[in-house]
Length: 335
Ligand code: SAM
Ligand code: DTB
Ligand code: SF4
Image: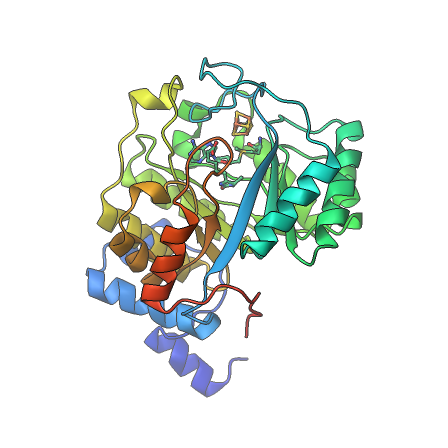
């Protein structure tokens, strides 16, 4: 039973219960609200769940780059396309830990290690598990993204102390086959289930700007918001341009206002999830990023590179945070 005052707050839109039964019509109606109403609602929900002046800062490292057997049509690391990227072997643990220490000292509160694999071999998973334990020892949150996992592999990562596993749905069920053919959306959902069941927090989102329609972006949010439980982290990536991949033929940078609307809808649908304004920030003005934060985005990647593509310079981000009065150091606990 809800407390009467809580029920009133929900009615007025200032608090939202966590729901996984959203309908397409409800999502369309939210997206179509007048801009001021949409932002007010998103910001009210945001304030009920988070410190509105705090943004989480995560840092990325590609621990194994390129040569990936998957055919994701947006990705510089797929072996299916000639993107000019030189594949590398899995990094040594000491180098990964040194990079994590640098990231922590530069202000990151989470360190995400990514490998260009369809799925990890058990031998490699052991190495990554050791990296996770060592990075965790630095007092920073850990995340890895290694492709598909078996239940046993997810359990091994949980035993190593892993906090988050990133595995994206990438786009709507309707648009998915136009972008990836070598693994299905159901494969991804199965991996998310294994991660959840192992007790690891889920980081799951997708990409916009690949030529999808607004309907597909909302279809992606519908999929995420109706998973059995909401991902704790929801990265919204704007496609970072890569030469030589098929998405070049269809890509179209979204209208900035449409991006803000999408972030606001994500915030309303998944009120307790951290929404990350992920790849593509280098194409955005400071004003657009400020609007995204107002709409409920509360995480970014810091550092001059993501995996293989660019990210805004650290000093630009720091200046923006100062101008907006945003804090980022502490890992905030949710009320
Ligand atoms: N290979 C693993 C996998 O795909 O599960 C992990 C690494 S992969 C690079 C992680 C995610 O980064 C992808 O699912 C995709 O959403 C995002 N991504 C990859 N290339 C991107 C690009 N050029 N622009 C924006 N996001 C991208
Ligand atoms: C996510 O959703 N975005 C990050 C992280 N998960 C692994 C990756 C962005 C990659 C951008 C393209 C690149 O740098 O290669
Ligand atoms: Fe491979 Fe991941 Fe890139 Fe797809 S997104 S090609 S799985 S590295």
